[in-house]
Image (cartoon, rainbow, N blue to C red; front, side, top):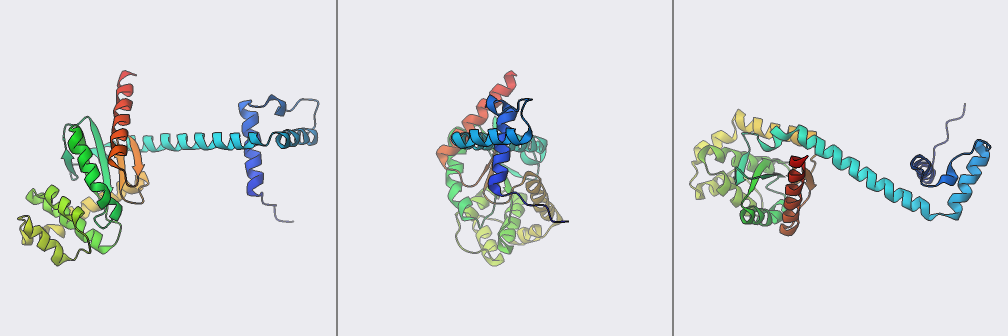
Amino acid sequence: MSAPRKLSNLSIVMIVAIVTLVGYGVVETLRKPATLNDAEFGAKVRGYLLANPQVLREVIDELSVQERAAAEREKTAQIASLDQQLKYDSNSFVAGNPDGDITIVEFFDYRCGYCKRSFPDLMKTVEEDGNIRLVLKEFPILGDESVLASRAAIASMAQDKYMDFHTKLMETRGSFSLDRLLSLAEEYGLDKVKLEADMNSEKTDGIIRDNYAVARELGVTGTPAFIIGNTFVPGAVSADEMKNLVAEARQKEAASATN
């Protein structure tokens, strides 16, 4: 028995296009009349597409739109299912307005250049808006130094110094050794002995482990990654883009409240 012949990409596109055209009733001439056999119908379809090749592009474009919309709906549903872990996890630091009407969640890494470049715009947006909850999720994915820096930042929460220390780490260039982290911490009045002990605690292990788990469920694979309201936004975002996304999130919230 010979192996089944594989369809080329073009053939697959043609089949999808034809099925879509027929299924949505876009071109009535492609509906198979009872008087035509399969070969005659195939010839009729082929003739139509050859005479109107732009139809294929229109169908492919429409399929892309529908696929993107479906992916966005699926991601929104995932975010909703993880709402508690993402937005109200008691172990993640909340900046901005704790009672804000819109929540932004950021997954970040202290060695991520895009995170560092986004940081000023993110904080500017939060400060100028005044009604945003900013949930900061340590997500160290760029090696051992990233993990070390995240451990130090998490440990600083026990001394009520997280935001100052977080800001310093975001503004710091270069590598993060333990000695450097402890030196930076000392500049902000942190107890180095306590910080190092808390860096190696089971609680710190658990926070990083939980952040990895929720990121994996949501499909976060890089940094920075934002959830703005219920919209997933991968990659760096400018201040203007952030403001627009926050405005859209508020509109969606208002629309949802009236339904």
